[in-house]
Image (cartoon, rainbow, N blue to C red; front, side, top):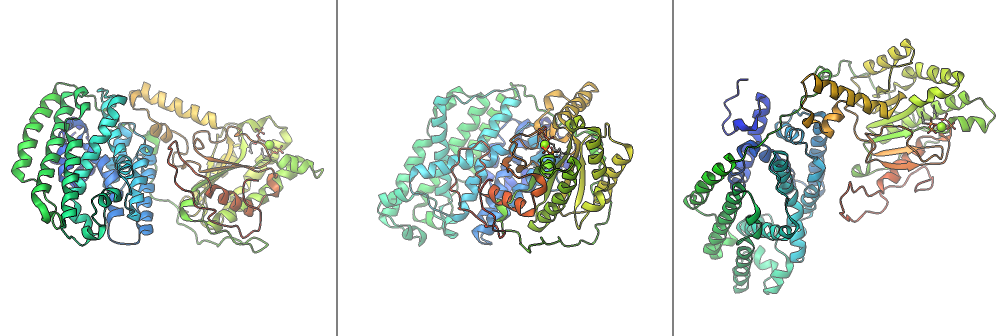
Length: 605
Ligand code: IPE
Ligand code: IPE
Ligand code: MG
């Protein structure tokens, strides 16, 4: 394939698609302009990995820039940063992006089978900077340095591992590496001191400023007192000590040794520039001269290139998406209809106010207990299902009122065929006239499940509902009908196997992301909140892939007794949960963020 003449994209990186090459080139320019020193050091990585390094750098720098801009309140900047990360997550799921930076990041994540969640420690450290809180002690300072940078380094190590050059960081060197990273960032903080003071930020720990009898005011007002002078001398010596002769170098590949030696030499040169600057340090950002930089970088480039050349690396290619999905139209076919507002609840109750970051994006419900509800009233089971449908209609209105994006309901499982033919016939009948009932303003209907065993006209009807509401952008309502979670996974596995046997897919490229794209509803977001009524505490083969990190909520009432207030209550309960996704971060939890106006009691019921 002919490659666009984009400078700096190494052939070894195996990026053939011109648009993708342009996307990586955008990341490269971004890194080069914003962080020339770090960029020149990334150029010492193996050529095949450089584009992915730029993309990962961009993934962390864009949020960092959003938080560091002068515009907007801290809360507004946090909202903007989170919106960008949410778009990135959605793009990763999709396998592509219309934004050039995100497109390159998505490719890197897919190609190397990375997990975006690994960056979340850094994202939360960056987010915490919005408040501009000064670290109190060196321990706080170091924790912040490690949290914001460790994931970038960790991802680079994964690239090496996946490329066939395992670089296990032995425990005895981890402390040494952390100390080294502290030295790098202390140097950076010193060199950028005046720029930080420009925006009123003071990143040095309070304990060291106090220890030298200096005051933050002296620094912020740029008074070069003897105390400040002594403080800077101490910090330079501390950074120099941390950068000198790191023990972990002894166990690295010669290419990595060349890289880290250049890092040490460049940052030691920056420290000398800081020393030379004297009182000017409070007014300018001292940098080593171009010649000094070249004297360090040129030999390092030669050494690193030679060393990497001797080690063949295996760069994975981006796995191709399943063919049927490439053909999906990107623009909605149907014109969105004029929306009718949600019908209010008979009692006039309004939804609770939920803070945006406490709102689940996707709620899934196992609507259970119809049969027992009917039995309790001496009614046939199908009357329970009929009443259950009314409950669903109210819950849908409540989902629209509270602004939920995705609601998925379990209406008929692949195991429910084992019920009596009469009950099954009633359930099929209820599904048949669903479309007219559910298509309220702005609702996009989806069907998840298998056509096997369903009457053809019902399948047509379910497809018609999907087709006719394809342009809607309000609530996405997915009806799981004749649905079985394991069957869905088995189907995806079979499709992947077929693609591999046909030679369209390298089995090594099968990642979680790729498997997700082979599911029948690849765009369905992960479930945030899974709610089951009817008092049973089980999942019953419902969305096993999508609920793997869902918060679970069980209530005892039967589904036909439920209304929108129970959905709102479930959402309020969800908002109080601490979702850690495997991290140990003990973010202090705000107290209950919202009260229901329905007057129902709070908490799990
Ligand atoms: C859920 O209610 C609806 C369907 C399974 C279709 P059930 O019919 O399972 O009600 P119970 O659990 O028997 O009470
Ligand atoms: C799950 O409920 C299926 C639906 C709600 C449609 P079931 O009532 O069929 O589940 P089990 O049999 O109790 O696990
Ligand atoms: Mg049941």
